Amino acid sequence: MKKAYAALTTLVCLLFASGTYADQPMPWQATLQPAATPIMREIHWFEQYTLWFIVPITLFVLVLLIVVCFKFRASANPVPSKTSHNTLIEIAWTVGPVLVLLLLAIPSFNLLTAQLTLPENPDVTIKATATQWQWNYEYEGSGESPLAFDSYLLKDQDRAAAGKEDKSIYPRLLAVDNELVLPVNKTVRVLVTSAPTDVIHAFAMPSFGVKIDAVPGRLNETWFRAEREGLFYGQCSELCGKDHAFMPIAIRVVSEDKYKQWLTAAASDLPGAYKTLMAATDGPAKTLDVAEAQ
Image (cartoon, rainbow, N blue to C red; front, side):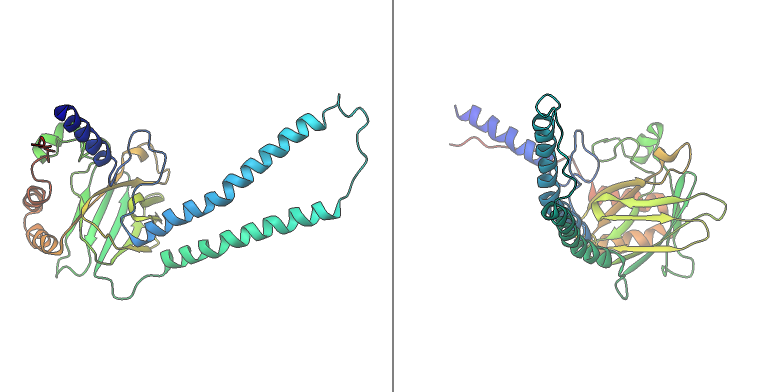
């Protein structure tokens, strides 16, 4: 009996653990990814808020359609009504939608303002340049020669050499060879553009609530502040050509000390800096041990 209870406890813990902080798309996922930034938390709230309007309106329209189909069918009303105006109904269907739109507009404008208002004096500034089909990252203000590197989709045959064989951490078609490394709880300003001779791309990171176009010849900017460490995945979300689906974005958020160590080491040895950082952050696979009650 005790063993059965322990096994059941283990199963429940694993089920809940598997759904925690899904910073990548999950099978049968029907909701937004867990929030990792203040902006994404507001987006989560706004989504739930709008459902209080969408669901009742949808059900109300469904009920009206059913009533109309049965009550006003030809067999029940061989002589149709000649009514053309109803003042009360016309006022209701005008005032009602106006009030709903007003209640949706106020929080949505507040959310847009928070997204588009860049904080003063960001801690880190990154320039992300998109080309078909990769991302180039440059750390602004990181010395006389700013650290810059390309980030490509990680191919299956390169996983072993990169030490990224665990597909639960480095999922297929989302993992990259060089992640964008950033410190936790720091304001990050991202300058986004596309190569002058390229097409429009888009920098999107679902867990951060970030999505902004990368336009050739134009410099757009956005910001975020990741509140927890982890490996986060996004993609180019603009139809940019035949390999649009193979242009992922990976951001590794680490402690400030690890970030500074990586930044210093990456200036002279980028592959070595990644291997050191991976060894410090990935670690051995975690196991769940359930002790039998005595």
